[in-house]
Image 1 (cartoon, rainbow, N blue to C red):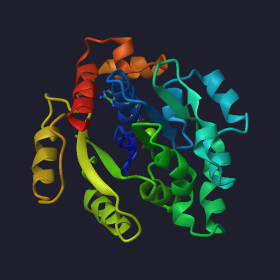
Image 2: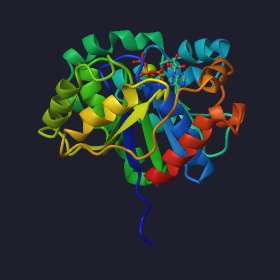
Image 3: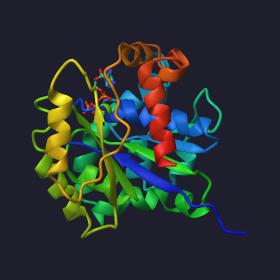
Image 4: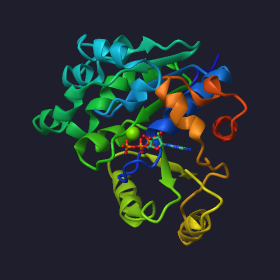
Length: 259
Ligand SMILES: Nc1ncnc2c1ncn2[C@@H]1O[C@H](COP(=O)(O)OP(=O)(O)OP(=O)(O)O)[C@@H](O)[C@H]1O
Ligand SMILES: [Mg+2]
C-alpha cells in the first residue's frame, strides 16, 4: 500500500494584518471537516493561531509549560511531541509563546540555520501521519520565516484588498523566488482577503495581480465579514460560530479548492 503523503503549507506575507492567521486557522478546520488529519503550527509570537482555538488562560498556560514551538526548535526536537489536540476531531496544534521573539537570535548560532524547523518536522512528514501541516508565519522576512518556508512544500500568500495590501508585493514575490535556491517551495497561490464590494480595491488588486504572469491566484476570495472577529473573540472557527455566514462558506470553498 502506498504511504500517505503530508503536504506542508505555510502562510506568509510580510505585510501585517493581511489575514494569514485567520486563513490558516479556518482552512485547517475546514480541511479537518473533510476528513483530513491536520496539524496547525503557530509560528508567530503574537500567538494568534493558538488564540483561534484556545482562550487566553489556556494559551498562557501552554506557553509557560515548556512545550511550545520555541522549545522544540531550539532543542531541535521532534514536533510530534509538541502537538496538542484542539477541541475538534482530526485537528491538532503546536502552540506558540512570546519566547519566539528570541528565535532569530537563537538561530544565528545554529548549524544549517535555514533548515532547523524542517528537521523538527522530518519524522512527521516521513510518517505521513497528517494529511496537512499548516504553518502560520509572522509578518517578517528574517531567518525564522526562511525556516518556515524551507520546511514547507507550498506557500499561500494572503493579500488584503486594500491600497496598502499591494505595497511590497513585488518584493515578496522576489523573496519567495530566492527561497527556491534553498528548497523546492512552490507558491500555491495568492489569496485575496478582506474584500469589500463597496470599494474599488478588489478590482484594483485583481488587476495588479493579473500583471504577474507566473503568479497563481485562488478563485476563492474571502470577503470582509464581522463574523471573523466574533469567532476569533470566542476562540472558535468561523463556521462553528456561524455556519451560514459568508466567510465560513468561503473558507469551505477554499478547502475544496486546495484538496
Ligand atoms: N475576512 C475578514 N473579515 C473581517 N475581518 C478580518 C477578516 N480577515 C481578517 N480579519 C481581521 O483582520 C485582522 C488581521 O487578520 P490576521 O490576524 O488574520 O492577519 P495576519 O496577516 O495574520 O496579521 P499579522 O501579520 O499581524 O500576523 C484581525 O483582527 C482579523 O480579525
Ligand atoms: Mg498573524
